[in-house]
Amino acid sequence: MRILVLDVDGVLTDNRVLYDADGLVLKSFSVLDGLGIKLLQRAGFEVAVISGLDNAQARRRLNELGVAEFNGGHRRKLPILEDMLRARGLDMSHVAYMGDDLLDLPVMAAVGLPMAPADAQPEALRLAAWISRKPGGCGAIREAVRLLLTARGADMAQQEV
Image 1: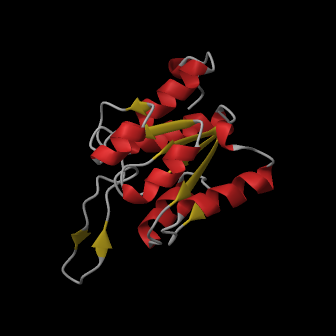
Image 2: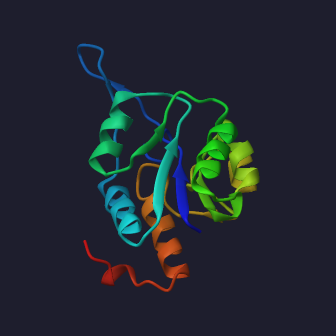
């Protein structure tokens, strides 16, 4: 695997949408997942995101994590991934993808390592070659990072933070 591609809602977040008194949308992101993304990047993996929604909260969090490739507002995710890979000279076998819902199914069916958080929809769970023990937005990505680093022979505890 060379690149980890993630969905946002239900993977990076816990699928909840909160509104403050002024109607501002709030989303929750896991610090565990954030550190996992940083560790993966430092190990030479690229991390990218394709989301059905384009929201400022995800953009801000991903910017904080140094994830430059954010593709928001794409209900058809497979063509976006194909364009990303073409630009990098990679193919689907190089991709680990974590998704949780119906919009993710075409990508999950095409990539080398389809993954899902524990609370993904049944259709996504059926396509996943690997399923985390944690739900989305609560450490599922960190578990996936551990899997990817271990497969490369890297000890997560030895990674520079």
